Image 1 (cartoon, rainbow, N blue to C red):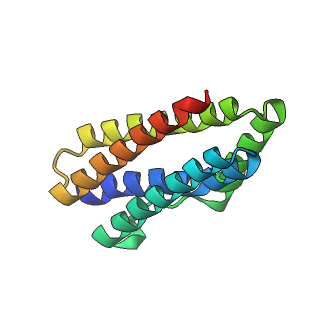
Image 2: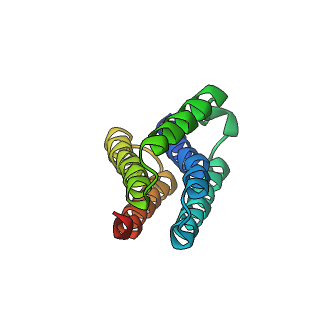
Image 3: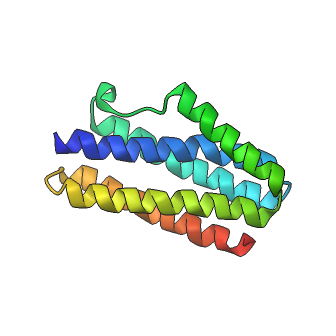
Amino acid sequence: MAQDKLLSRIHKNAQTGIFISPVVAEMTENAEMQHALRMQQTEYKNIFYSAERLTNRQSLINLSPLAKKRTEAMVKLSALLDKSDSHFAEMMILGSTRGVIDMHKALTKYTDAPPASRELAHTLLEVEQKNIDRLKQYL
């Protein structure tokens, strides 16, 4: 069903943001950037739980523990090479950009998804763009 597939993509994208935002926030010493990342995490949580409210939770994609560990390790390894706020902002911007691409593809593919699911996908797109714009100041 298109609704479940679109909501699964939304859920997975939001879950990635929920997971990675605090990891990066812990690595930066910039209080303003930490605040921006905490705000992102809150926005992702709102979208994540909205997706759950719109469908049966069993049909949603969840990040596996292995995927979480792998992502965290990659971020921390990258930070060993460069601990600058610019680098952290770049990592987050690239992640949000991938989220934008994924949501655009999902909206194109699942045109028959219900309006509430499509609206949530558009909300995620807006959040991702806002996150990109917010973090550009740290580049």
